[in-house]
Amino acid sequence: MKCPKMYVNLIHEHLDGDITKENELLLKEHLHQCKDCQQHMHQLKRTIAFVQSTSHIELPMNFTAGVMAGLPREKNRIRMNRWFTNHPILSAAAVFVLLMSGTVFSAWETDEDFSVSKQSNLVIHDKTVVVPKGETVKGDITVRNGDIKIEGKVDGNVTVIHGDKYLASAGEVTGNIEELDKIFDWVWYNVKTHAKQAVDF
Amino acid sequence: MDLLLKRKIKKVKKGDQDAFADIVEYHKDKLFHLCYRMLGNREEAQDAAQEAFIRAYVNIHSYDTSKKFSTWLYRIATNLCIDRIRKKKPDYYLDAEVAGTDGLNMYSQIAADQALPEEELEQVELQEFIQSEILKLPEKYRTVIVLKYIDELSLKEISDILDLPLGTVKTRIHRGREALRNRLRHL
Image (cartoon, rainbow over all chains, first blue to last red; front, side, top):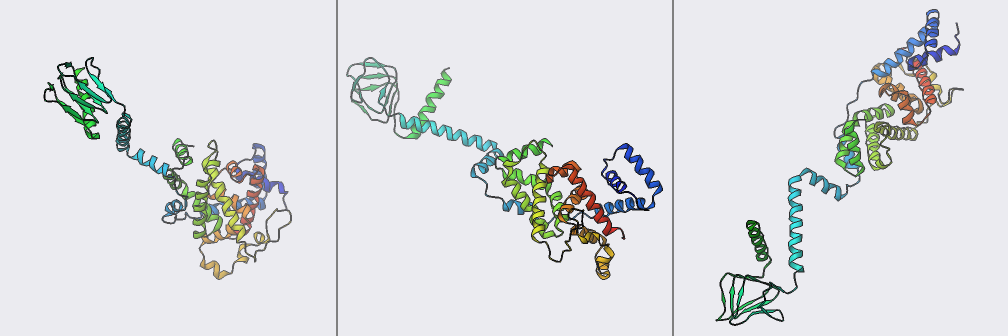
């Protein structure tokens, strides 16, 4: 018996799982009566089972490595980012050091202007600060990028940054005298003064 | 799609290759299997699967994150496999199309026990035989059969991967099934 092609189509719809309820019934009824179509359906189901039975294939070794080797080179920026995310504490330290050294250097480099702490009786001659004879200067004196000549008396500390100090025989400083010429001295001096301020607070 | 994969893809889009290695690890089995069933040869399957991953990486910017990643990846892989199949099409192919079947050739109509000499049949195992029968399907039927029965994808996904209307996918599956039935029914 040759069945209409419609039934074969219904079998396929059934196998795909998108057959309508009515067609499902129609197909069932037909399969009951028709040996050929029954066999056809059976063969298709067996075929599917055969196809699905094919064993799993072992993946070759180093598959992923092979893919990675074939990729274009990664940008440096990304490699750096990954390093930073993998080493958070080191990177934090690196950023800190970078920023700190940045400020230190810029402060050191840009501070080229002559400056001196203000005391009324200091005399200033072309980047040289003079403590006049017989006078007493109260408070600390800080001279930047200039020299100091002490002929009178200073009641406090004297600090000279990037400069020289001349202490006359009659001159007198009650506190310490400091000369800073190197960046380390300067940094240390900064640290000391800031620490002192912090303690004073 | 799970969140982890989405996050990885975001990283890959920024160029992170470590994140991509994780994606490869996750998908490599299925993709290799697909290529193997399409091409029938381990070396070629490895080549094709690896190339598919590399292409996915290079073209990751064209991947639309609102869609399923595996669908996109499978599309790259199936296209690569189809290209390879077309390039190595053997000339002894019985490629006369059977009228009205849209691409089914004479081979698919020959019963299996006639096509293979008995000696050869004895040598190959059943599974290899089935694999060889899948490989004899013209590539457009092979693709849908492999995606449907080996990767167990839904008809909708297959239509997305191949960029074909659902109806076409169904027709091809029906014809592919019939062709295989003709070849395997005597087993």
